[in-house]
Image (cartoon, rainbow, N blue to C red; front, top):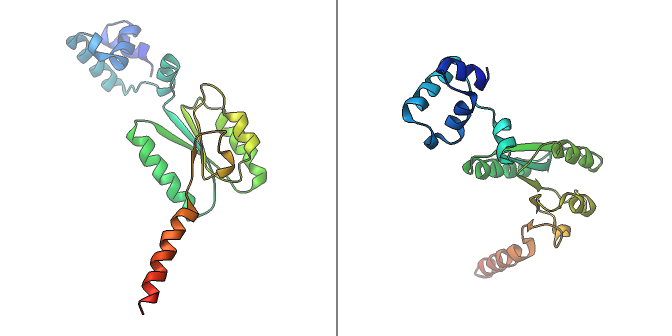
Length: 175
């Protein structure tokens, strides 16, 4: 089913169908209703890929992450929640060992992404440098070595451990 089929059923041009889905305020209400009804009857759903080509945005945020571990599963879930709140989709590619990192990066790089999160310290600085180009939104997650190469999100283990240890020491000395 294409927008041309919807146009034929609704008695309008294909560009009117496109406008109804992209910028409905520009189309008269009666025409919008006719196009919407025809689309519903035909089971037509606009292509996100076609829309992305038009506005140069795919709506996809990629993440390269290790395949193992509950920690990484929780990270992916958190990314998915955040990305979904922005009406985008998360595209995840995983790797099992250091040798598979390059393949995972090449695999996800085939897509037109609005952003890319590299989430593992096993992804090399050279790989991160290669991916950080103008007009490419790349963020390094949990990779202290990427500081200065790409925006970085990391956990301050030492900073977090110090107050935890101090609290534990204070609690145990009271016995």
